[in-house]
Image (cartoon, rainbow, N blue to C red; front, side, top):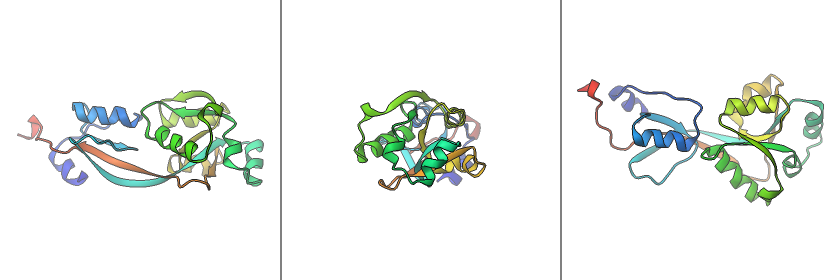
Amino acid sequence: LHKEYRRQRQMCIRDRSDSLTTIDGVINGSINIGIVGMTTMDKELTFEKVLSDKLVVVTPYNDYYNALKKNNVKISSILKEPIIFREQGSGTLKESMKMIDALGISKNSLNLIGTANSTETLKQCIRNGMGISIMSKLSVEEEVANNQLISFKIDDFESVRHFYLVCLLYTSPSPRDS
């Protein structure tokens, strides 16, 4: 799908948007194609799964969280720490809420201290010790490998998350292509 689309149209690439904003951009024509972490029932769109990932709890890299990791502390205990989520419309937020519900944790019991509008902003906040979060494992691989962040596997929940290429189901050639 994406190879054929690339041959037919010039792409507009925008990064650091939440999934709903990206989907809205595809629908209104301001974005030709996007990568999102959720699907919708919108019949004018097509979604092609391009990547699967897992959710992890992400914390600052410090002695306190290293000790928690070494002692295999339960995720439910770690989620009592100050937490920062992605903004409304984010596929990561949607999947995080599913996970929290599945673990039997009340959303009202979370110590929510803020939201971030991008993965990079969220990682920076965590690195600076502002709080923890739930993120895609692939998005923090480099920081975990470089001892900037710690990731905790979520054992009590099947945390697989999918990413999709989204575009209009029926697209006509742009004026440039005519």
